[in-house]
Image 1 (spheres, rainbow, N blue to C red):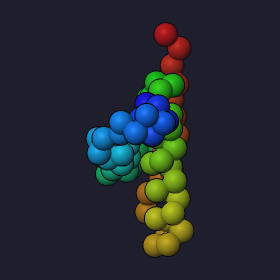
Image 2: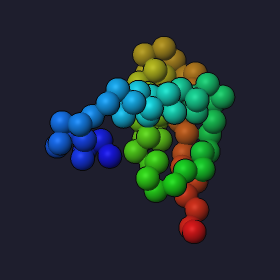
Image 3: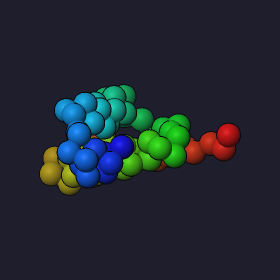
Length: 72
């Protein structure tokens, strides 16, 4: 969606803030495994990046969450 919106110049703030809010929800509860659909893997990767950068700067605090992908 984000790629499409940036190509068409039709992006909204929601497209940018939703992945950050989702990452915050994951990290808040120090989740180690997160069930996600294939369309949400990029959002989980953002949470992983945030956790890794935070841990590098401030010490080990957040576990780096891993995806649990299920087949339909």
